[in-house]
Amino acid sequence: MNFNDFETKSAQDILQWAGNRFKRIALASSFGLEDMVLIDMISKLNVEIAIFTLDTGRLHEETYETMERVRVKYGLNVRSYFPDKDRVECLTREKGFYSFRESLENRKECCHVRKVEPLNRALAELDAWVTGLRRDQSSTRTDTPKVHEDADHPPLIKINPLADWSLERVMDYVEKNKTPVNPLHKKNYPSIGCAPCTRPVLPGEDVRAGRWWWENPEHKECGLHRPR
Image (cartoon, rainbow, N blue to C red; front, side, top):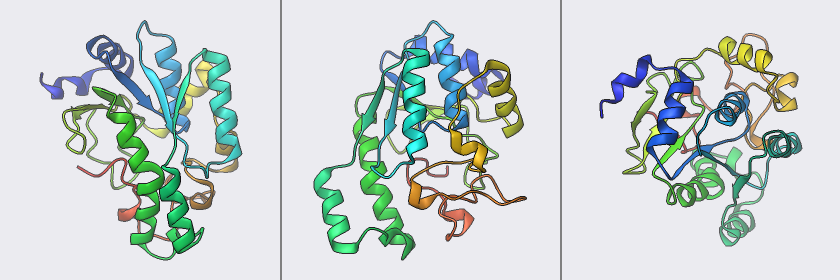
């Protein structure tokens, strides 16, 4: 299998191939713009691609509302994976509720407990996973391929159908297909994560400037998608 061949394929073609190729495959969704585009595409294809999300316990209310809209509109079940209760209790008792703002090490610890460990449990049940990563989202994602072996979770295949899409193309798809979106996008939240770690972006800022805004751009990953 030559993964480079997928670079010229459309997002729909890649999803169709992936759905036919893998029996245990799912989209990891945080219900941002890109994920909603992929959910809409999946709903229109004759494929069985599950949807799962990582409920960190600190999501925006608007994100839960969007999850419910997906369930109702598309008739899709969303699998929620939660962090280990004991680890969350230990973290907050020892370091408080905002330790992630004190240092990069603390922030990565929080992300590992609330996101990375639940993701690992979700991926343990799969052969391939789909994401909404795009190359122009941040400096840490510029080399994102459309399909590749996931070195962090072997032998999984990681599929990024929108890798070469621009934000304008995403917005155009949403408008033309009447795709439901998280209400926070209209409040200048182009990238949405946990409520305490996300703020609106200012005019001229990068689309991920509102994520962990107190950190340098090269550090703005939670560990779910490490730079290649």
